[in-house]
Image (tube, rainbow, N blue to C red):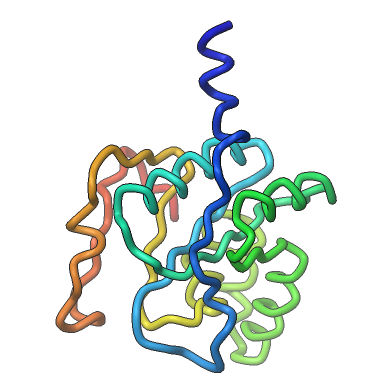
Length: 172
């Protein structure tokens, strides 16, 4: 019972007020945080996001990408925890991203995106992001100290990328 109470504490924690990355016109300098999660992983995603901002001490704009359908009450709970974040529903992302990929004649990429939800991270974050650099992490990542390697300023944002080695090939 105590463990269950601990897991539900996130729903009683203070709202996070990271700035939205949807307030500017076009792509801007800096880093934007993007997280993709389903309703089934909402609790974990909130822990992940809130632990990152707590320890990182940054004001990077946040975009939360909904994977699958979210009911109105689930979107309201998400908005309550992340009131200043840009929340992109799957339906909204599909309209924008599919139109963009079709316009660029990238039908094979569009097909892959529909087949494998993880391709949304690779495609949607770039197309929907409004910052030059993107920081993304999964909903099962918790932070317990300042993640200096993720937030250190990069001299050339296109010359370096940091990836966690995965135990299998999630994206292919």
